[in-house]
Every structure is written in structure tokens, then in C-alpha cells.
Image 1: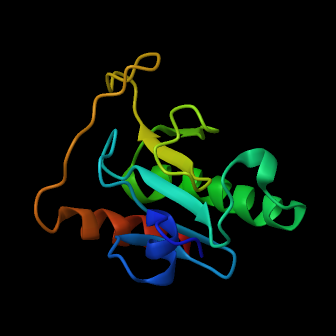
Image 2: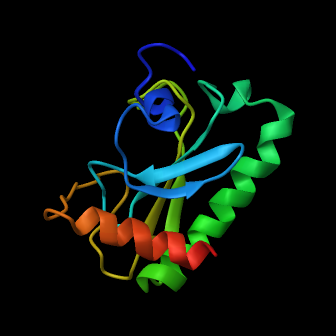
Length: 137
């Protein structure tokens, strides 16, 4: 854990988050400013800043979880597909490696890299997290 890292604090349980996946090496939770409802951030428990910094032993757990989350967007939310991405340094709002897994449907309005954000109604994020979590089991 790195002091001052928001994602490390979420992993440690010191900050609240709508958890989607909680495993030995990775944790996934809903983005607080989602592109679309269900937008999930997947992080290694270990503080790693960028993809080049990722230890080889965490590669498979991270990308296997990303693969399952992409399927959960379809199975749990009824999306037609997903958008999976990560930034390294530039546009990386939190300096802790994270994979964005975003539900997508045709005509959803996401074009290029202009990404409008949405919000959850009170209590709605917990329902989205539960649906995705259930689709992972």
C-alpha cells in the first residue's frame, strides 16, 4: 500500500467503493464518474503505477480478471460488448495501474476519445456492482 493512493485505500478497505470483484491479487470496483453505468476499474492489490511496472506474476491474474469482467458486462448488464483500456502516466488520473472495463452498446454515443460522464442515482451503484459480481460467479 502506498500512502495517499486512493486505489490502495480502496483495496485496504479504508475508502468505500462498490466492489465488483475481490480476489487475492486483484480488486474491481465501479468508477465514481462512469462513462456508462457499470464502468468498472480493475486494479492489482499491489501498488503498481504503470503497465511496464507490472510484475510478471500479476499479468495473468489482472488480464484474466479483465477478460471475465468484459464478459460480465454482457452477461450481467445486457451490454452488447465492452471497451477495455488503460492509460500509462498520460491521462492516468490515479497513479495506480487500473484497467477500465466499460459496457458498450451500438449507438451509445461514445466516439473517439470524447468521453461524456454520467452519474448514479442514490443506491443505484450498489445494484450495478451486485449485478456484475453475480455475473462473475
